[in-house]
Image 1: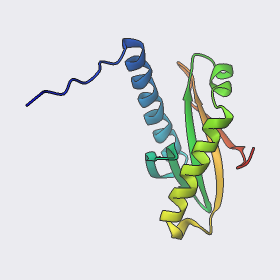
Image 2: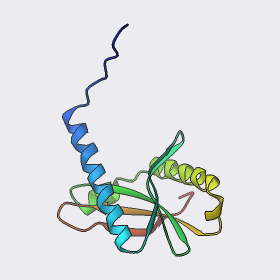
Image 3: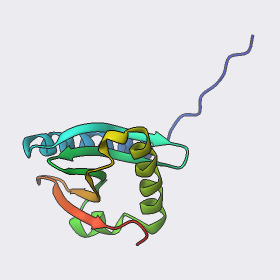
Length: 129
């Protein structure tokens, strides 16, 4: 029997992965303190991925987390292709959770920079933008 060898990730890639995980965890707690209920984290389907799906009052939001050195870099990090992937994953999530269909749906972004609280941009884009 042969042993499968897993490729080793580059140290920079591992650091980025850990930084992203910490940023998402920080955002989850920030959202909870603001009254959001976290419905899913790291929701993945073949057509896309959403970092956080949260609900507050009559709104369900797909939230993309971007952690960078500056707010400007974080704000520029969400490309149109990635927005489309988030939208497709959100559509899939909503079809699987019919009880959420009557809520207002929106796409948010949370920007994380060192030494600061996350900045939450509500309704950052609309599907089709």
